[in-house]
Image (cartoon, rainbow over all chains, first blue to last red; front, side, top):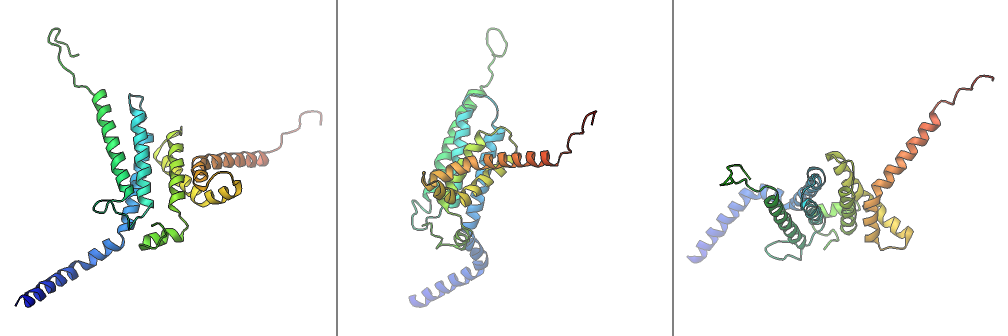
Length: 131
Length: 112
C-alpha cells in the first residue's frame, strides 16, 4: 500500500513537472545569459548615474560616485564571471557578494549624504521664522 | 570555473574571445575614464564604457605581448583607460590631415 502511494505521488510530481517544463526549461537554459545581460545593463546604468546625474558639487558626492563606480565594476564582474562550483550561501557567487557589499556601501553613503543635505526645517520658537 | 565549459552562454562568450579577467580589467579602466571625462551624456558614457572594454578585450593581450613590460591584466586596464582617448586623438588627427589635404590651395596674389 505504501508502495502504491509512493508511485502515485511521484507520478503526480512528474505530471506537474511536465506542465511547467517548457517555461522552466527556457529560464534554466538561459538563466546565465539573462543574469549576465541584466547585470551588464545595470553596470552601465550605475555608470550613467555616477557620471551624469551626480554632477552637483555637494558634500560626499564624490564618495557616492566612487561607490557607484565600484558597484558598476562589481556588477560587470558578476556578468562576466561564472563559478558553478563555488557557491557561498544558497547560490550566491563571490561576485554577487561584492555586488551586495557595494550596494550596501552606496545606500549607506546616500543615506548619510541625504541626511546632511536635506535637513527638515524647524520653526524657531522665539522669532517665528523658519531656521 | 571560467573555461567556458558550463552553459551555452559561456561557450558563446568563449567563442567570441571574451576573457573575463581582461574584460573586467578593461571595464575598470573604462569606468575610471568615464568618471574623469568632461563631455557627459548618456550616449558618450555608454559608448566609452563599451568601446573601452572591447578595445581592452581585443587589443589588451597583443599590446601586452608587444610591450612585454607589464602583465596582461595591467595592460588591459591601461588600454581600457587610454584606448578611447588614443582612438579619438588619432581620428581627429586623421580628420585634420584629410581636411587640410582636400582644402583648396591658396590663390596667388597680384603680380603673378
